[in-house]
Image (tube, rainbow, N blue to C red; front, side, top):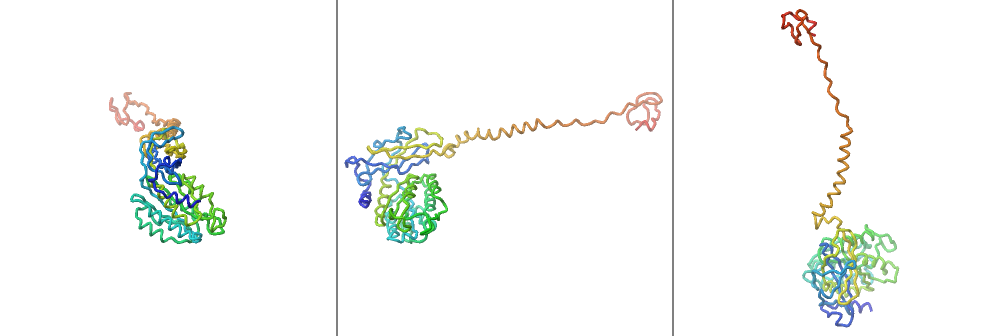
Length: 389
């Protein structure tokens, strides 16, 4: 049954609308782009019978609400949008079992072979540590070379591989996705469940959330087994996908992978890009809930966190206006303390002046004598020496 569903998902985006096929379509929000907030861009996948992409829809076929408020669609594109994907591939020692490494390589090559002229892809392989084998590129030859050389070895640094993959996509605009394939758990080796990654699961998820990168997670192996070689921890893989807005897909065997990767590429190439302006364009740091209906489908959910309390990137003037009161509150106490200290300082003491010399008079004629004279100006008498002191 799973194989039938995966094969059905390979149908191309030119499929007729689901309404014509008598089946209600299913919509899914695959990415919420807030880089141009308050303009929000959604990438929406619409599938019909057997998971086939539904093409031919127009803006009038979609109904979108944010926090329950209907929004008006501005820009709309139906399929054909280029994408950037990073393929994070587990190449730990357990991938050498049951042809899993060969199946992973075949699947990655199938994905690359389906890329269009504007699409880009990168490759991250992880064992004891993640290694960037190819930065996002349009060169199919470069991608093929990095994939064909993969060999299974070592441990499973799953969480660190997420961080490296997200870093390659963080500065990329437009549709982007991290496609993560693993057959095991983040651990040092078989029999030792201690994680080998430097990052924790929570940290890896937080990095993806902050960058707005959705992770498509593919679990390969036996979901009923606790064995380190054949079993997978679906709880962790599902948590990674749901927390980042991605999707978890289970592949029971390596033979399913090529079909699955072709399906993922076809689905991304058939997505609708829809842009609208938020009905609450405030910089308040709150989470906004989005609901999307397409051609009568059930409501697909999405959300985003408004992260620009001080929106320096898009409005420097507003940021400065908001910062001025804060700067005033920081500077005002210092100015007040300076004034208080100046008032408390004692006034400088007045200079001490020497008392004036007492007046002197001539012993002969009684006329006053000027300071320092040796002869009286009145009678010409010599002033005694003691009178000069």
